[in-house]
Structures are given as C-alpha cells and as structure tokens.
Image (cartoon, one colour):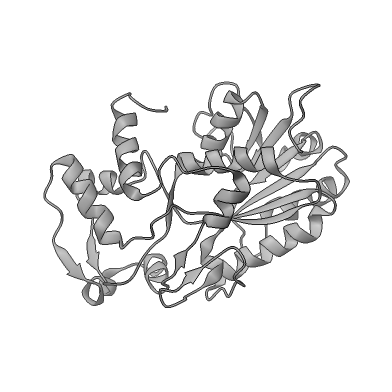
Length: 297
C-alpha cells in the first residue's frame, strides 16, 4: 500500500496547483500528508491552502526527487507532457517515488454517439487535444516502471466559482437544447475524494484506469435549469443547438461535437467510495451551501 503507517508523513507533490490540484492539496493536508505544489509563477499564483508549499515548476526537480507520490494535473501541449519534458531525468532516477497519478480526460474516448463507455473501453480520441492526452497517458505508463500508476479520466469539472450559478449571475448562461446529448461531469471535491482513495488503495506496480465522473450523465440545459430554480431566477431562453453552434468558439464546439456516457461503477468499487455529489443536483446544492459558509471552504 502506498500510504505508510509509520515513519515521516508521505510527501505528495502536485504538478499543477490549479483548481482541482488545490482541492486535492487541501484534502491531503487534512489527511496528514506533506504537500508541495508547483506553479509556473508562484508569485502570481492564487494563494495555496495554508500548509502547502509552492515551488516554481521549472525549479521543481529537487522537490520531485523527494516525493513519495506525484499527482500530475498539467495538460500536455504540442511538445507533450510538460512534467516529463522538463523533469524526465529526475523522474527516472527518483528513489522513493511509489505512486504516480495523472489527471487525463474522458475526451480520449471520442464520439460514441451517446453510447456508454467504461474503464475497459479502448480510447479513440478524435481531436488533437485528446490525442495529446492519450499520448501523455502512454508516456506516463512507459516512465512509471515498477511504481503504481493511476490514470484518472476526468469529466467536466465544476464547483465553487465554476458552475452554472456563476454564468447565471453574470448573465452569460446559455440553455442550449440538443436532445439526447449528454455530458459527464464531476464536482471538484469528488476529485479530491477519489485521489485520496487512490492513494490508499493503490498496489505496488499496479495500473488502473479510473473514471472521475458522477452517476448521471446529463444534458447541459438540465443543469442550467436546475441552477436557475435554486437561485430563484428564470432560466435563459432555450436555443436549439443548430442556432447556438453558429456563435460557439471552436473549443466549445469541440465539446458539443462528441456525445458519450461515461460509466463509473468499476472505479467506485476499486476505490471503495460513493460520491459526495452523485449527480449535478447534489453538486449544485453543495456549492450553495459552501457559499453560505455551511460546507467545505
């Protein structure tokens, strides 16, 4: 098991202390881990949770060399995975690294016409950015060697500051209607829950594909409608997808060009957990509770 019961606190290094990485850092600290995160420019980065050290990404070699566990959240670019590109020599030689986690995307499955995919489905990425993600997964698998490796394929991430509530309040929410088109999503705090469970359950040398998605793939318009009801607001007008697509930026259009439903039963069984937010309903309620000071900060 990767989490020791005796000796010094294990050291989790998070390469990319962004939205999801910060949630994992906060949860790991609460579980007794020593946590260090990287940022391209620590001086310009958002304040980390108290107790989390932050180092510049380019200078993170010595920190990675002292890690027992490494979580990579940084997205690959055209040159490949940035952590491997910058720190390959350190990663190959680090003596105490026992576990690597990589936050990838469910986008590696491509368009499935609304059909279900599970943890054993072969990836078929249909876009350049998702092909880069799959290549990064493969690069980490090649580099991991005897270490445990968990590939987390993550759905659309939402949570405080990144939800339909924010769009509704800003007047930018869109209720795009495309019957039968579903998105899989995951609340930020359930990502943290899953990563900590993975740290507890990983086996030496093991390889796992884990789906970080909630239990109910849902049409985007339904989420907007639910959020509007919870705020006591009228939902924005319904717009057929064919009309909305004409004004969509290329990135948004790329998400709408694919339709799949992502299963998570094997992941929850492997990690021994149930989501705190099993659907968007609980997730939206949790966001409002946190805004009112009634939930995690």
